[in-house]
Image (cartoon, rainbow, N blue to C red):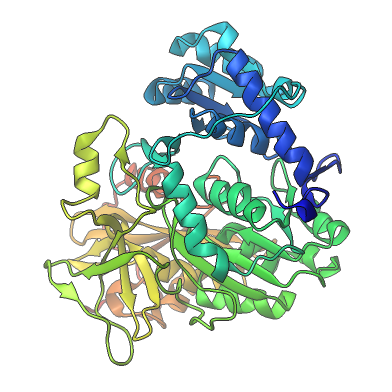
Length: 509
C-alpha cells in the first residue's frame, strides 16, 4: 500500500461512527486471516459469512480470501432452515456470524453438520492479534460462492474466482468515476454480489471512503449523506423510487451528492429523470448478474449513454444478441435493433455452478457464452436496453407482454408508489397481465382508471386486465421483484370469466 494511503479513512461504521483507516484495515485483515488459520480454516475450505454490512464483514471476507478459502455469503434475513440449506449446498465447514445471528447460526450448523467449534463470532476476528503475513490464493481458486437462481430453477452456487472478481473491478474502475476523495454510501447488502464487488472491492480499490449501513432506513440514509458529506451512492430501483417520491427527501441536505448508480434491476427512464430533477444529481445504471461477477454493461461516468439504456459492454467481453429463432441480431445503423436474448463471454464470467454440470451446460454454451435469459435491444453505439426476462414474459393470446414496460407506466402515475405485473393463467387468453399496485399515501386510485391509463399508452394486447391493491411489493434484498410469489397468489384463484376491461375500451388484438 502506498504511504499516502495508510492514514486515509477506508470505512466508516454508519451505526457507531467509528472510522477505520486503510492502514488499520490491512492490519485487521491480516489479523483475521491469522485467527481463521488458528481456528483450522485452510486453503480450499468453504466458509459461510452471515453478517450485516459493517467493517467486520469487509475484514472477514478479505481474510477468508487471503488464506485461499472460499466465502459463501448468506443473506442476513435468511431463516434457520435457509442458512442450513446453504451450508449443506455450499459444503461449508465453517460459519462466521454476527453476534445477534449466532444462535441461528449454531442451530443451522447443527442441522448441516457443522461442528460447534467451527461457528465463529465475527467480533473475535476483529480482536485477533497481528501475527505475520498471509499468502494469497491462486487466481483461479474460487474466492466467493454466492447463490443465485440464475436463468433457471432454484438457487445454485455460483463459482467466482479471484480472477473473475479482479477482472470485473478492472473492467469497471476507470469508467465508474469513483475517485480517492469520494465518500460512498454502503447501503447495498454486502452479501449480494452487487454490493460485494462495487462496495467491498471497487470502492476500497479506488481508496475512497465507504460508509456502511447495517440495514436500509430512508431517514438514516439521508442523515448519513448529510453528516458524512457523501458524494456517491450505489442503489437499487426500490431506493430510487423512494428518493424520487418520499416526502422525507424534501427536508434533507443532499448538496454533496453528485451521482447515483442503480443496478440489480432495470431503472425506468422516467423514474431516472424524475430522480435527477428532484435531487440535482446524475443518475446512471448498469446491468449484470451474479454469474458475471456481476457487471457486464454500464453507463460510464461522463459518457452520455441514453438514459433508458444500461450502457455498452465492459471492456474485454464479447456480446451476442440472439433472436428467438436462433438468428444473430446485428447493431443497427440508426435506432434500435430487433429484440433478442443477450449472450456474454469474458473473464468475469463464472466457471460454472457448484456441483451442477447440467445447469452450467444450460447457461454457458460450448463456446463459453453465458446465456443471460434477458431480452435486450442495442443501438448503433452499442448501448444495450434491457426489456425483460425471457422467462418472465407474459403470453397473452400468443403475444409477448413484457412486465417491466407496464410497471414503468404504472409507477409514473401520480397516485402509484410501486407496482408489479405478472401473468395469470386464463382459459381463453393463455395468460392475462395482472397488476399489483401500492397506492401513494391515502389516495387509492380507481382500478379502472389505472387500466385506462396504461391502455392509452400501449398496444392493445399489452393492456392490464386486472388490478389488485396491496401494501407492498415482495422483493429480494437486491431489489428484484419476487414474481414467483405474486404468480402463485394470482394463480391460486383462476378466473372463471373473460378478462376485465378498462372502461370504454373495446377488446382488440
